[in-house]
Image 1 (cartoon, rainbow, N blue to C red):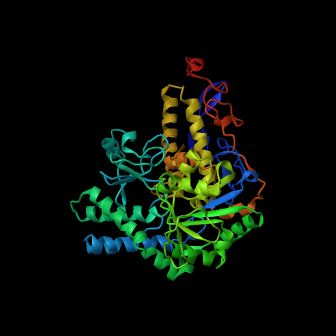
Image 2: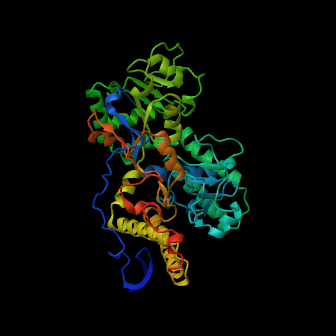
Image 3: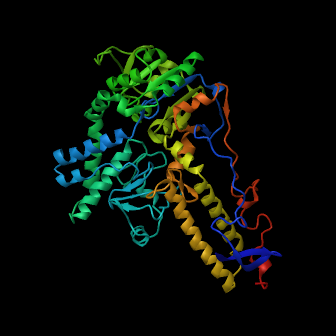
Length: 507
């Protein structure tokens, strides 16, 4: 229909009624067809595979990829543990796993029982704060936190370490998706039935129940019993390992999972000779303490799982080792510095210490990346973001016009921009949006990813698209004070856009 829009005429604002559509070609630049390939490897830091002699891997969600059936399994077992062992209400059995309710990287306020997304600057993304399965109104959030900023002292530190005083817990690994969902469901049940409960006890009980699923071996036995139901992409992982081996690269595996579980999975993915591909295999490593605690020595494990007591002088190919620590690993192998590239899915537990303390190159495996890129390549998303960027640029450049007519238009744009921002969030996930963005800012998760991972990708199979001489170059994205190569992303004033002084008196 007819919309009131503002255009620059001779350097100042002109108000007109024009025929527009939601994606008017008068205001929206031509939409690019330069879509992103989901199988791309993205670089935060320049790195050449030519320099890499040794490749290291985590197991879960790095070599072994799991179907959504695994999250349902973890949720159901942990829910039943709460009922049977912690005496939670039988009514919790009504709750089933909700596959797309949460995203990775969220924070949980243990004291307030709130799940939320926080950006790189410690600001809560309003509209993404949930108590149970329902959103908390923005006004209530602002009242509870005296704004939307979360103080540093209640959050874990930059490297993911927590102390007693930190009441904000961040969920960083993929196994935490069923944990967050279970927390939300139990909170929902208690509120729905007006049951008075202590949120701290609930958090600890859910955490313990989820831990029991792993520690007591319940999940491992279930996966081993029906491995085809739970593991996918096996052929691609095998192809990557074979490619590295054929090119003379050394490989090692460091995982927290037990031998039987890893052996069963690798037999399915690679074959019974999988150990021939690896120079060192370490199970039940107890990461992240493996990277920091010098006290735990390696123990050799027999094929039948028997722990041997002899001192380890060499890490031998074909043998299996348990626990140990990175300092002993470095001493026994001599593998140091930037000739080592290690892949893992947990930015803190797998990558942070390796890049900060030991100078290893690091690769983050982010399975969610493939889905998000496919969404970003859709026409709906491209149109939404192009229009949103256009609105933002108009607001930035036209805000100097203070007359009533101009301000009415600007207020209309502000409302439309808020609507477009919510729409862009909902495309990824109706509750929490993208893993990587809180509106225009990077998420707390994204900031850590850019600091601790030299490269990142959706799966290890992305390596199949590159030869082993390839150099990954990060894009040179402009800093705020740098002149970019695309004028529409320039701040007001930087490209001779008028400030208030040049338009004063001509409104």
